[in-house]
Image 1 (spheres, rainbow, N blue to C red):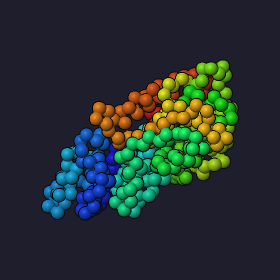
Image 2: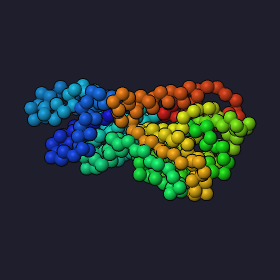
Image 3: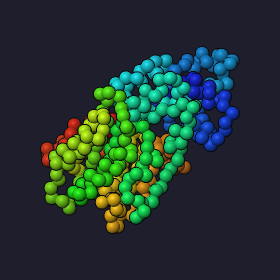
Image 4: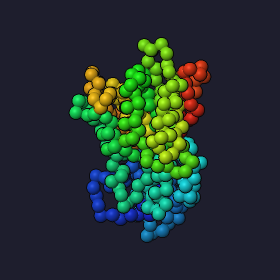
Length: 309
């Protein structure tokens, strides 16, 4: 993971009198070698360190041995910069910061540090009959430009899958992206109880839905292949469901579908594991499935997804 940091953000953060848990979490993410972040800065570390007025600020991240890239604020305004599988985080105080979000990237400034909260919290949301759709996803909505869903039974009910997908997309996907920048969307799963996988039919239905409901283009892929666990992966989150994601029908929870949805950001670390490493293992399985050659009745789409590179 790469974390892009400009000096203005670092200075404003360090000089702030605020010492909330939020500030402490961000400082730990920037400074700790155990955070797993590759730190990219827009200033020469040696030059800053030699400046007595700036040395105190730099010492906050000195353990990370940052890489200097004076042009990253310019380069990140191009489509090419974002066509990689990197989960880039931007901590910048800069007028152009909002443009980064047009490419589905996480970006925070010291004027809105609360946007970083989702990086530091684990959520477990119980799903019961009080819920009627996936509208609760809006509470963890964040910038992203790619999604991968793994669920063998997502398409099993011909009448409910579109209702669930609509609700998931409406509450998780961005409202807009830069002109000509495509959102990647991949669904992997296969219900072995069904003899036919109507992948081309589902592909046409979903393409029509995406074209009608979203202002930006969506690069859809559907692959009929078995995948045991049920996940939604975004650029920055792993969402896991014990009962999959086709939970609702006619705005009611389906019988026997009570479950708990687990949410972890890529920065979360436990005592013995990290969310980023667990996510990598799961996505490597998806990459292998995505690269496997198969008959035309078993997949539809370009098989391009930034998360599956």
